[in-house]
Image (cartoon, rainbow, N blue to C red; front, side, top):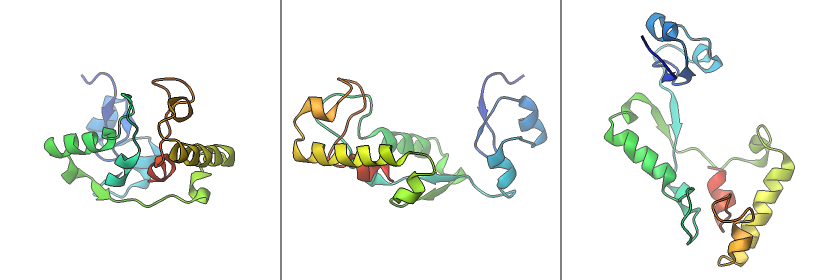
Length: 142
């Protein structure tokens, strides 16, 4: 018996029902929209690692590359279509974020670029919170 979330072999989405795995049917929108035999897409761009600062932080610059390398070592990259992605436009970002948020990230990125050693500016929520670097906006758009 399968317990807990598992990754569905067809759509890659989290599926909590063993029936979906055993019968090949899944109620997720992603699965229904994906043609049989199509590979899930993995968007990865090494430029994401430019977003960093000198302080220890859980959101380290290698977080995306570490996951990518782990998937590669586990032999899972062959089961997905790896794409480089592109820099998302404001229009694309507004499908999931408010314009206010997009503008704030741009403003905070510019401020961090101008004063990269100001920790209070770069980590406005305090140490360990969200941080901004001079590359935050560009990296986030990937």
